[in-house]
Amino acid sequence: MPHNSAGTPNSPGGTPGTTGVLPQLDRPDVRSIEEVVTTALRDAILSGELRPGERLLQEQLADQLRVSRIPLRDALRRLEAEGLVRIGPRRGAEVASLSRADVIEVYDIRISLEPELMRRAVSALGIADIKRLVDMSEQMDARVDEPAEGRRARRAFYSELYAYADRPRTHRFILGLRDDVQRYHVMKNSERALHDHAELRECIRVKDALRAAQVHGEHLRRACADLVEVLEREGSA
Image (cartoon, rainbow, N blue to C red; front, side, top):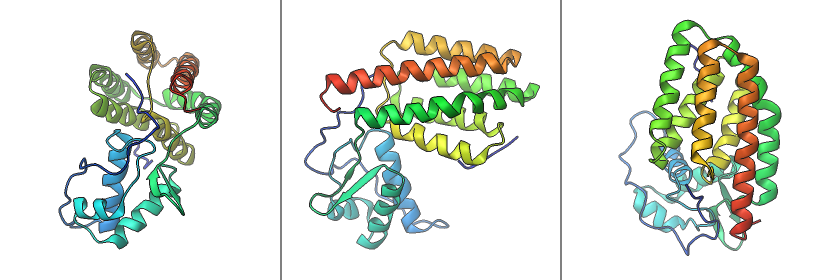
C-alpha cells in the first residue's frame, strides 16, 4: 500500500505566555534534538495545548523541554516556515493565528484541489484497501468526543486515502493546509459531519469516485462556513 510522507475552536486571543503543557523530552537516539523539539511543539500547537496567539517564551520552553536555546530557536524557525508560529521583532515567537481571510483562502485552495485528489484516490483502491480505509473512517468517527485523538485519526485517514491519488506534492500541500485549520476546527452540526463521513464511506465501499469527490467538496464548504462564523462571533476576523 502507498505511503507518502506527507466542538469549539481555540480562542485566538492567546494567553500571556507559555504554560507547563509540554512534556520533558528524552534525549533522541536517531532524530536530531531539533527535530524532536519541532515535533513536540508542532503536536502541542495542533492539539490546542499551545493556543493561537500564545507567546512562546524561549527560556521557559527550553527549561520544560530540557534543551538548549539553539535547537529550540531552529525548531521555531521551522514552525514559522510551516505557518504555525509567527516571529516578530517585539513580541518574539507566538503561535500563529488565522483571520477570516486566512480561513477562506485555505478552504478555497482545498476545495479547488481536494475533490480531484479524492476522485483519483478512490478510483485507485483495491478490495483490501477499501476495507482498511472504511475501518479507519469508522474509528475516526468513534473518537468524535476526543479532540486530540480525533484530530490524529482524521489526519491519518485522509493521509492514507490521499496517498492512493499518486500526487505526492499535492498530498503534502493539502496535509499542511489541513493542519493550518484543524487546530481551530469546529463543525456546528456534528451529526451533519458524521453523516458526511458515513456517505463518504459508502462511496469508498462501492468505489464511486465521482460521488466521493462531490460529497467531500460539499463537506469542505460547510466546514469553512462554520469556522468563519465562529471566528466572526469571537471577533478575530
